[in-house]
Amino acid sequence: MPKLTIVANIKANPDQVELVKAELLKLIDATRAEAGCVNYDLHQDNENPSHFMFYENWDTRELWQTHLNAPHIGAYKKATDGAVAEFILNEMTIVS
Image (cartoon, rainbow, N blue to C red; front, side, top):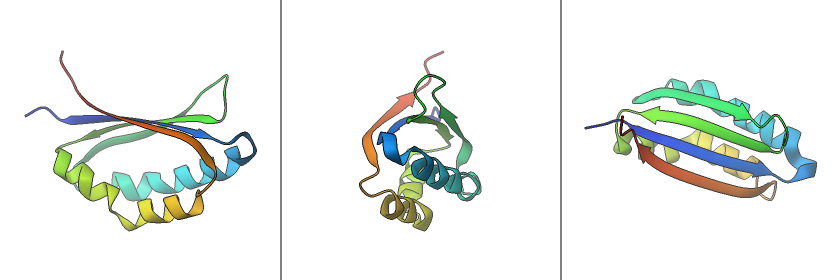
């Protein structure tokens, strides 16, 4: 079965960019250490610094679902409550 690719677009409120960025950075080491995480890479838009994107690959959807319930994800959600203007998540599968 193909690995699961996740593309998560996070747009911070303009006055909360540094807070959101700091909290997103906290997720990286803990997530990369999780079972099934192939890569977990954070990007920031060069022209719109409030736009962040995670590009992730997971061995299985089940392991990614476990990640979503991890304590560090809960801590991120609590710390950024009201600071994120938009969050769009895409579950994808490589075709070629």
